Structure formats: structure tokens, C-alpha cells
Amino acid sequence: MLCMKGNRLNGIRQIIVTVLALFVALPCAGAESRLDVSRATVKIIRTAIQPDYNLPWKMKEPETSVGSGAIIAGKKILTNAHVVSDATYIQVKKESDPELYDATILFIAHDCDLALLDVSDPNFYRDTVQLALGGLPELRSKVTTYGYPMGGSRISITEGVTSRIEIGEYAHSGSMSFLLIQTDAAINPGNSGGPVMQGDAIAGIAFQANIHSDNIGYLIPTPIIRHFLDDVRDGRYDGFPMLGAFTDSLENISFRRYLGMKDGQSGVIVTVVVPGGGAEGHLRPGDVITGIDSVPIASDGTIRFKQGRIYYSYVIDTKQVGEPVTLDVLRKGKSFTVRYPMRSYPFRISWFNEYETMPRYCIFGGLVFQPLSKEYLMTWDKWWHNADRRLLYYYQYHISDALFPERKEFVVLNRVLPDQANTYLTDLHDKAVDEINGVKIMRLEDVPEAFKKPRNGYHVIRLDGTTFPLVLKASEMDAANRRICEKYSIPSLIRLQ
Image 1 (cartoon, rainbow, N blue to C red):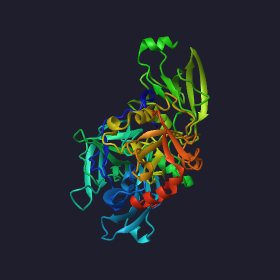
Image 2 (image 1 turned 90 degrees about the vertical axis):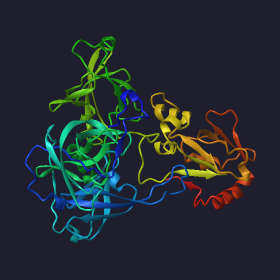
Image 3 (image 1 turned 45 degrees about the vertical axis):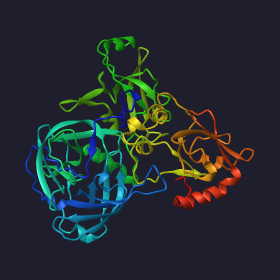
Image 4 (image 1 turned 120 degrees about the vertical axis):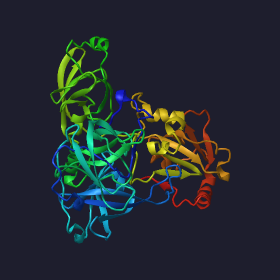
């Protein structure tokens, strides 16, 4: 579920770093596995190349990394999305076999950091076993982690203790929070994607670590893994649904009474209803959600879970896109029930880290236009402090403050590539575009269309927050575009998809 307390995106979160491996010494309580789990644990070698969102026509240098994976039912390899994201070439290797085998990605889920791989060579599966999924481990129970962390080339097998089960941020996506299990494991790069076993079944997949604390590692538990595997059964990954509204806690008793709540009533208050989300037309800001699927919600936003409590988003995360949710709602002192199918989040600005995606852009007369996104903002060092203030405001508050609801996305003038045709414009950069030649820019596709309609022989570009427009002479643009392609080694002036 998209996790934003009171609808605000916090630029500085507790830094949980995705490690291309977890050397997780994890929790286990039960009997040791009777399986030879090493026969189901594989090393994954990825070669990847990523685009440059600062210069969107360029690619960064290739990189190689190592992770781990687990062979599961159907002779497929389960691993983390971050182990294979942006891959141009993937190979896998077994502990008992010196050969390297080519692998391909069947499905990848960047929101929950999971991926499913396939190896077409039948020889790869000789002398292997397939692991089954188990349940959630109990707190303080031992688990055993298998994988290929740095420091050696052979398989590593470690143990640790389950210390916490809660909703937490998945670092790979950058903005998504799901159920996770914390352990007191030692962590090294290389173990991400490896199975964490309790008895003969998978308790989770190792995936990230907290770099600010010693011996804190995390694994993706089996309820999230099962959701991913169930989702892809139809041949497509749809992702996790969202409630369609942002909520905040109601721990202040005076506020609860102000809202007309009686003693003994509890819940969370709706702060924003997301336009285009499933809750639109069903919920309103100021509504109090007192229960979800007949499960009471406490005023701190938690529900009962095992021997403790967990944030109510867990109920949402158990559902697939399109499944209904039933909410008990209190509005102006009156109680009623609403039910609606949940949808994926309708994005205008991408809040998440992006993978396997090329930056969209349009270059005209040396002016580089592209959509506002998290990847674009991350081209600044410490972007939450140093990125353009107006763009950060659009990024964080475009929903809550209903900013330019007519815009399908926010198109930004990234930079101006210096040329004789755009002299004196090169100091302008990182500004949202309002209109070009009188045409309101609602999405990137509007930019090349607007430039087809010069006004009295000139192209007139208006930017948010500026008084005077940018002006280019229309008759100079064809020659300028040819020069810019050659001078800056740009293979194409436009990529819209």
C-alpha cells in the first residue's frame, strides 16, 4: 500500500538501503530443515545498464552485481526485483555445478521487490529441489538463511532470530510499505533474494538492511510472496491495490469528540480522496473509517495481528487489484458502510523509483522537456533539500493542494543546450511548462504538437513562476535541431514512450 501519513511524502525517511544481498542470520524456532536447501539456492549474476534522467538520451555505464535466488514449484527461480532490475543479461549458477546458465525474467514486481526467473536449459534443474512456501515465523523463533554474500564464492548458511513483524518501507520502490520481518542478522551484499527457511519451508526472502543499525536485516514474508505469485497466474502483474484515500490517526480524544465520536469509538480520519481512485464517490475528507472488512481500526491506525497489532494497510495488501473492500464509516455522527473495488494508484507524477523504463523527453531548439518524476528529482544530490523548490512542491502536494488538476502530468524544461538559436536562454532550467504557442501543456505529447503552430513566426514558451516568455525564431529551428543532434551526439530528439 502507498504509505503517506496524512497524505504528506516525507523527503527524509529512515534510510533503509537495498543491498544486492542479505547475509541474513534469521529467526527460526522449529526443527532444522530435512531438505538439502543448498540444492535449491542459486547465485544470480546480473549485468545492467540504467538511463540518465539528467541527460535523458544517454545511458550510464554498465554494471555487474551478484545476488541469490530460490528454486520454487514449477521450476522457477524466486528472487528480489532489485537483484535483476534493468538487466541486459542474467546468468545463474548452482552450488554443485561449475556451469553458468542463461536466465530470463518472467515477471518483475518493483513495488514489492520480487521477481520470477526462468532457465530454459533443462540441464540446469538436474539434482535440484523445489522449495515450498511456509507461514509467518513466531517472534524470537530461529530461521536459517541461504545465499551467496560477498566475502566468498561458495554458499553461505547462517541463523538468526525473528525480532519484529510490522509494516515497513521497501527501499527498492522508494515509496511503498508492506509487511516485513526484521531479524538480528549480520548483512553482507550478495544474499538478497536467497531463501530464509524455517523447517522445510520458506519463511521469507532476504532483501534489505538498515545501514544505521548493527545486525538489523529484513525479509519479505510469505503473504507478500503469495500475493505476487497469485497475481501473475494470469500472465500479467497488476500490483497491489490502494484504498483510494489517505488517512491520519485520531489519537487526540478532543478531536474525536469534535468529530462526533462516542467514547469507545475509534478509527482514522480521511484527509484526501485520491482523484480517479476507488474511493472517489464513496469517501469524503473528514470521514472516519472505523473498520475495514469488519476488522475494527484503532485510533492509531492499527488492527489486531497475531499477538500484537499492525497498521490496517495489511488488510488492503492481502487483496488483488479489483477486489472489493468494505469500510465502516462515520460521517457527521452517522454510521454507514461502503463497499467498492480497489484500484491501482492513478499517477500524475511518478513517486517511485523506476526500472526497465527509458526517460521520455522532447528536445526542440536545444530546449529539453521531460515529465516531472522522482527519478528526475533524484538527479540532484540530496534532492529533498536541493531540488528546485517549486518542483518539490508540485511533487509532494499536487494531490492534497489540488494543483493544476487539468494536467495529466507536469512537463518540465530540464535545461537548454547552448546553441546560436537559443542565445540568452541557457540560464533557464528546471521550470514547469505552462503553455507553448498558446497551447496548454497537459502532458509531454502536447509539446511537439504545440511547436507545429508558431505564432507570427516565433515560438513562445511560458513557464510557471516566470513573468516573460521564452521566444525562439521559428525559421531557425530546423537548422538548430540538426546542429544540436550533431554537437551533443543525440540519436533522437524525441522519445514519447
